[in-house]
Each structure stands twice: as C-alpha cells, then as structure tokens.
Image (cartoon, rainbow, N blue to C red; front, top):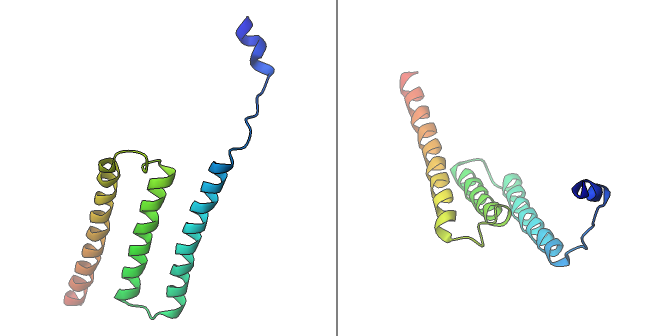
Length: 109
C-alpha cells in the first residue's frame, strides 16, 4: 500500500544549463551544415561535383548526429566505426548501382 501512496507526487528536476547549451550547440552546427548545403544547391550547376558534396555533407551530418544523439562520442570508437563504415559502403554501393544502371540503360536503348 505504501507504494501506491506516492503515486500522486511529481518531482521536477531543475534545468541543467550545460545540457541545454550543448543541445543549442548541436543545433547550431547542424544548421550551419544545412546552410552550406543550401548555398551549394543554389549557386552551383548540377553535376557530379554537387552530388558528391551533398553526399559528403550528409555523411558528415549523419556521423555528427550519431556521435551526439546516439551518445557514441562517449563510447569506444570501434562502436562508432562499426556503424559508420557500413553506411559509407552502402552509399558507395547505391552510387555504383545507379551508375551501372544508367550505362546499361544507355546501351540497350
């Protein structure tokens, strides 16, 4: 019965200013990278260089998000690389398959 008596109370913890500052810092860095992508999108001509820059910046943002929000920055680096390296190979696989698919389509038609 004593466990049910405390059910109605709620304790509010005080704000942790360091955590709030860290969240704003992460948001600012991600906003900065996104703004760089927008500048490239509206100033460069479409082509392989632009797409390579987009993929590179996307991988940078993905790795930063993994480090911060998945709390992998405080873990062993091998855990981060075991997640990030397959992601890089997957992006390479998709790019290679798209390139081969376009070439096969051009040869057939």
